[in-house]
Image 1 (spheres, rainbow, N blue to C red):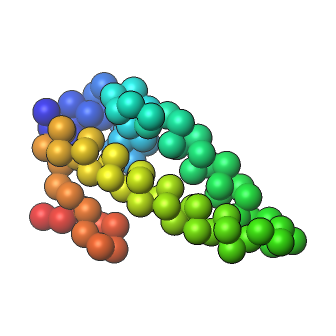
Image 2 (cartoon, helix red, strand yellow; image 1 turned 45 degrees about the vertical axis):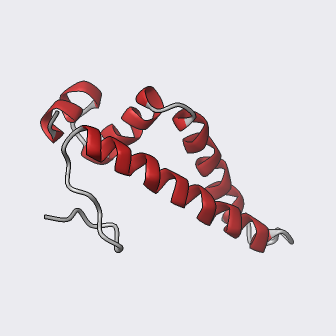
Length: 89
């Protein structure tokens, strides 16, 4: 499958389409994206004494999301991302 097929199936924006595909096609994908959203909100609270813990959790969730995104990119024959988050190729 190609990027066009992903966008046709889940929407026109490839970033949003990848998230929609993670939710729909990968076990635990929806829960992971929900947890990432909650952690982002918690990380924005500067008065939180547990901010360092929240940031560690956020980094772990980002790494897990990157792995799920890589799987969707593989399934839809999309180029992988480099270390800066930019598509390769």
